Image (cartoon, rainbow, N blue to C red; front, side, top):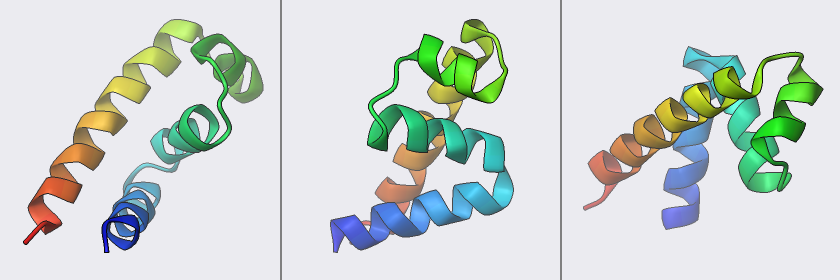
Length: 68
């Protein structure tokens, strides 16, 4: 159930902000650092770190809201 909720939240994030979702994929699933993610996306490390923080907060809120 939790895996499905997490997948649904990430899918919703991708619809809302594909850039943030891509950062989550690279950082969480790909294991890339902020620097590596920044290089892959053509962004600054600071921008990736900022978007990563926002994405994590958004995902946590979505998952918490979906919990019974």
